Image (cartoon, rainbow, N blue to C red; front, side, top):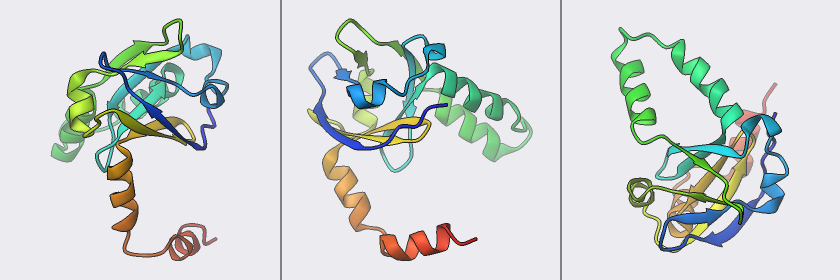
Amino acid sequence: MSSFKGSYAYSIDGKGRMNIPARLRKYVSPDANQTFVITRGYEQCLFVYPLDEWSKLEESIRQLSTTNPQHRYFTRTLLENAIESVLDGQSRITIPRELIHLAGIENDVLIIGVLERIEIWNPNTYREYQKKQPESYENIAQTVLQK
């Protein structure tokens, strides 16, 4: 089970290659075989799943109803740009241009570990996302963590 956490400021090169930070790589299971699935995330970021974590997500997607229009839309939107990328010798993944454009990424990226996945953000987009939250972190934590 992956347990990604932390945030890291990195950059992406002209060929769409980006390093996966060593502190995140140590949580990648050998079952992932150094392979990641990169796809569209929420709030204009990218999701990066190790292959073993992606397989779990894929199983839950298979349980969705093909007769439900929302399920079909979600499945198509998530999968239409999904691509596998294997770590190269310098611990980089390659992100397709379409996904880089979709996330508004230029050169700098903010990499965030979010338990079973890694998120890749344009740092400015992430700052704007944080500013737009209607409630404080403390108020949201109180609501989310209520037992």
